[in-house]
Image (cartoon, rainbow, N blue to C red; front, side, top):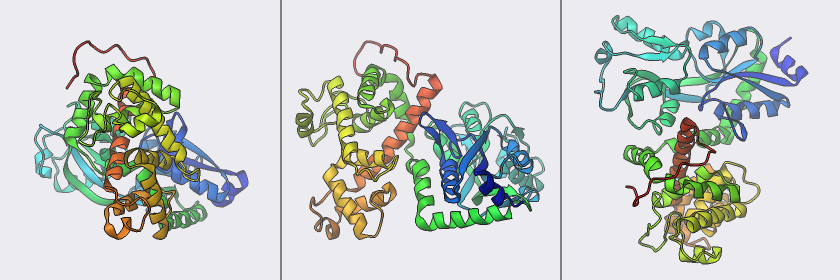
Length: 444
């Protein structure tokens, strides 16, 4: 029986994936990840239930497919010659660059000759093995070790900690991890536009592959692929090395004295305290006495009008500012139309926090004029900068705004939030009571 018929008859689409930020993870709110979003949408189109099995190693994927335990693999797999011996690949839905990664300060390798005497560790059974084997034909002295018990993120951490000189990583993995390890750098591009696709058992899944291709091509045409990519990678496009280093330093020196306030405000208003803390860092770098040239004040940088609206007497009181900022963010979230789904709803609420909800209303109108989707953050973020162009703002009720600022604002907060999630997960304090900060003046 063709695999597509099996899927439809049993009512289940069994998909094997990797436990990775670029594929699939389990969050407090349930499964998430770019491969999960795509596979879930495909299962819904087929009218079946998605059953996703996550594996820790790339080497486990092919056996699960060939044994029939999984109908397909959605795991960020590159299309390689060796994999084609066992698998068929569908329509490529993404392309990545393959980087050789080193640590800043250790000397940047500028050619393959420069790495012949350095330690290189890569993920076993990954496409990177085949890539290095091809290079080895021209550079016989090139050697490396393969590790089947780690993910790409683990090896990037080892390079950052100085445990290994070099590793190989695809651009999405590197773009995420460099926010956590700001000393990581790209030495060389070993491959560019390496194609990524779903994989199917060879000669037995042609019907399912054909339906998957139809789905992915339509997802590209409709903008769904772009929205998925923006959800998980949009915040990684802009990277500030100095800013990231400072953020991690301030996490240790400034945040402890305010963390309990962020946690309490988050609990009161039903918001992840780390998102509130990310807003606070973007606004003031966690400085209670911050004042902008326009007169906004405090950790959450509230205007006098906003403070009056919230009933706050002292914007520079840290607790008042944090609780006020949490309430104001929730109020903006409530104003976003119910037709907007998460996470776009959060991104739009953050933009409204920055630029004001009335300007966001204007941009929704502008997106509609252009034939876009005002419920999509990617369409809204493309249109927001037009609020600074006379051609457009003169036609809108609330006029001029520096529309590029909320786009940068949202991207920065997304990056800070992801770093906070990573840091609190690393130290095991995501939901624990914070330790008492040391006495003394404001840390710098």
